[in-house]
Amino acid sequence: MLADLVKRNRSYRRFYEEQEISRETLLQLIDLARLSPSGANRQTLRYYLSNAKETNDKIFPHIGWAGYLKDWTGPVAGERPTAYIVIVQDEQQKAIGGPAYGIAAQSILLGAVEQGLGGCMIGNLQRPGLRAALDIPENMEIVLVIALGKPQECVVIDEIEADDDTKYWRDDNQVHHVPKLKLQDIIMN
Image (cartoon, rainbow, N blue to C red):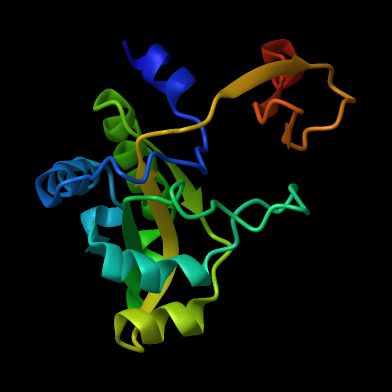
């Protein structure tokens, strides 16, 4: 059921690194993105796939992992993603593509959850370094990276009041808490 997939689709940042993701699995996830809506059906997105440790190691240093967790610099060895999908778009096409990359990323992550995987959309990137590391052409804008793997962490949703802090946090047991407003607090009428 879609509601269950959405509830299980959290931003996972720690993974079982020994659990590999095949290229075939990545292609299945990209196929979901390919079938997703695209502004004017222009299909402006392209995807750089990585499931090899050597390439993953090139991507990892260019990612900012969790802005609210100031003392955490990202997953340690053994907890890192086993695959990445780098979403790029031709600079001249980005006005046409609109929010297509968000729709595509959500489709990818819902597909990952359905397969027992998890991931995180990451926009906090050192784009020039990532471009150079992956030899991405200058005319292609890196819009988002999706880190993927078998989740190694527990992420829970905490329902909060309208004036409560929405910053995510980790407790002493390393459970990742994601505050979410109540439904009635986000409806305007």
